[in-house]
Structure formats: C-alpha cells, structure tokens
Image: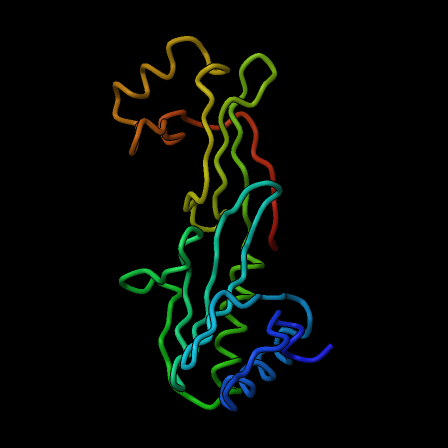
Length: 188
C-alpha cells in the first residue's frame, strides 16, 4: 500500500512537501497507528487520529501541515478545530519533513498510548453513571449519567449543589468515589 492509500488520500494531488511529510510520518508510525485525512486544501493538510473507547469518542488529535509549518494538538471531536491556545501537548513548528514527522508521530503515539480508565457508579446492579479519564492526569474526557437508574433524590441533589453543566448535563464530579474502575486502553 502506498502512502496516499495509507492516509486515505488516493486520487488527491499533493505538494512535494506534503508527500515528503506523509512518507516520513508513515515511516515513523510503522503501521502502529493510522491517522486519516480530515481536510485537504491547496496549502493545508489535516491528519486526524481518533482515540476512542467502544461506542465512545474520547479524544481527537490533529496534525496540520500548512506552508512548511506543522501544528499538532488535541482538536475538537465535533468540528476538528484546534484550541485557541495550545494545550500542554500542543506545538507549532517549522522544519524539514522528517523533523516534523518525528514530532507529529510522537504526539500521536503519546495520545494513543496514554492510559484511559472508566469510572463506574452502580445502583441495583446497573451502571447509572460513568466517566472516562486519562489515568495519569485525571482529566475527564467523556461522561454519562442516567437519573432514571440513579439512587432516588441524587440527581436533584447534584443539580442543587451545582454539578450540572450546559443544558442540564449532570456532572459525575459530584458522585464521590466510583464503585468500579475499569482500564479501557493505553499503557500503564
């Protein structure tokens, strides 16, 4: 399989620098990870790696090559936009294709290998709430709360105590220690 097929870019016309970057990145990834093309324009190439759990989108990581500069960071799972200010893992750099690919591959591998756990809260044998987190930092990635399965009065208490967000999304932060912690993915 050639580099264009590997990145789902068959039939696309790319610049020499884009082709060199893709070849170097593929060599670095060595088929362990397979980012896909999120967007391609005349002067920009966005590659995306989704870090998921079964049936749950957790984190998307983007590498955008634009006019010889590479930006890498977490991106929105909804519109693939980069954060307005870089996260601690984010970068913007210039360099040769191999140098850009080395830094980009390291970012993708860091996110793909980072340990993720799922905290679960149980009531009457059912999981009524869960929360996916990076195990190393405790950063919350995705959560679910089912008031109809939760202990009676708990949802009202959480709302009263301010553990609600946006359009009534109950936050698992107010639940205390989970009943179960499940390793989902990544290296421990």
